Image (cartoon, rainbow, N blue to C red):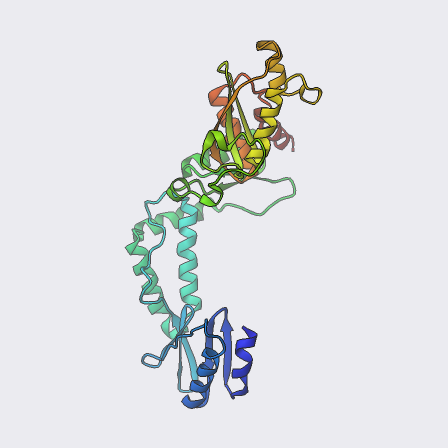
Length: 339
């Protein structure tokens, strides 16, 4: 952008500011302003700038409008006419804390962006938008009162650990906090965003082609280009019906190929301590095993992925798992309790 701006800076200006691709320019006369605009738009044929003109003296710039009156600059909060004023609905599946924070930020932004003469108008606009999204005055009053009564302390202490959990409901999160407190565990519970419809329905088709890996075991079974998926929780089923639940943060094909090699060559020295070698020895006379793959879900966050894996192991009770995943989480909570 500096290359585009430099030629226009030969013209005198009272103010020349830019934020990303938005300019605010003030000059003594219109001819100078026209010359600067022509200079900016003529530097590259691929860059076309549009021009805002004052409306009743107000000039929009970013999320505020600016006006000079009597030698004094005034500002007020601004939203484009095309803005549909849609925010998280009051009945949406989000933590109450997140909803109240959105309201606070909107009110604070509107107030800070407005001169004192226009703050009342800005506050009125925010309340109108909030009410259109289902937030009644009574809901806001009760929620603020609850937060004021609780007065949570989020200051991180030396022995405090942050526990990230998927958001299910505010009631569930409060039960987790109460359970940790009853156990004597000093931990701050942070709610993470769960999967939405977009995560389930929209697929990344970037790898939807035949895998270039030699002897890839993922593509022939899934047919959806899952070879390079990271953060997968998967289920492997032996020909005898026994299942194994696993997870990996690496590309799925790398981890699954390791499983298949161990299952196909259970007597190989480097595979003797693997689950598949032990299973082949105890149930299949050390013969090669035939495995089928099923991807259960994906989760890139390591803590959440391991927690989900432990949940699936507990629910499905696979005989081939050693339950180390659940024991690992138990050990973590045990360590927290000791601290």
